[in-house]
Image (cartoon, rainbow, N blue to C red; front, top):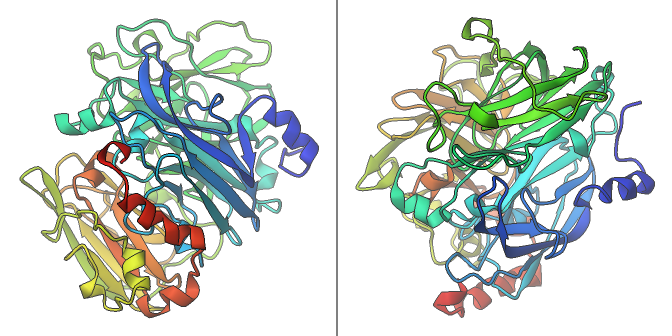
Length: 527
């Protein structure tokens, strides 16, 4: 029988093992010393209580059609890092609740220390694998990230797997020993460790515990792979096992069987793994495109770095001795191989330019990233508040040059050229929507019939990625590179969608109105 969240009894059993929030709960944001790779450092973490806060944060879960009430309590005290915060629920559309989307200075002022804010939003028509993270500066790189899963009790692909529960969520994250603002000031980011489900090792460090994913021979598992990366993309594989991809970024896809998945920052995949190998231990591998500081030459998995363990029931408690497939044996995933399971087809006319076209070119100048020669600098007044205060023309919204106005119920085609922006490919994420990728960064071909549908896709230097979507969700929505250090350096714009209808479609609670007056009166050591 497939395992789904269908009873309170099941939830209570699971909650004893893992920190879980089902639909409603408190998310405490705290500072804490943590050593997930054996190196202790101050962090910013989330937990259902201050004492339980860890990395990654609690798994938030519910079913398609549910409403979520997450009370975020800011208990941050470390004045060497940001003490304010905000949370983005990555991949969820926030229909009629643009105010709950989370990006600081786009849809809200940050939550002040000693205060809380209730995020209340419905998920009427989405199911899949999502996540949440701080959306203030580079704060999520210091630890404020966690998984979010919306289950579909009527999943059309349920016949493909037996187990889909909190134990089949796999998170990948880069981990830094310096604080994130120090990494940002240094320039190109080089992480110290790769954490899989919150555990890992760093080159030259102690033999810290590795994450273990348990399976039973003969069963089929739906694993939900989440990249919580601040920077690198990963080559993910499990020795000796095929991975049948059935979801990309919350959208069910027609099954594609591979043995390696390249996953960029903020992307998610579901894959089915059949536990059909001899009982034993198998390496789970996640090799970053930028190797860890101090990685031995030609050995990205030395002493268990970039690794976790797949362990069959009955196998000894020991490190695997398995080997990865040779490069000639790798079968990887590309966007051209993925197609939506339901309602495939891009909106608009089936040729380039067959929609309202917006062209964007990435650049880099004097330490700042640019889009069409403008670097995004957070406005002092959130874009949503500017609109609610009476600004109705996108060209009058701040920051100047970084806000694009979109008309209601139209098809838009966005051409994003990587230009001269360094550090790519840049995974671009659009808030409030999925989009159809009619031209991927690694292909010259257009696909209007059944392109991959997702919310985060790469953009490479000198190449063009083209996406399409329908403007049916009024609000200011962030479009940005999800390499968090690049976002902090200006690689973002705001899509101001159907501005005249924003107010009537997104009634804000009184608590939201209070955020900016409180924030504006904070002292420097409270920010």
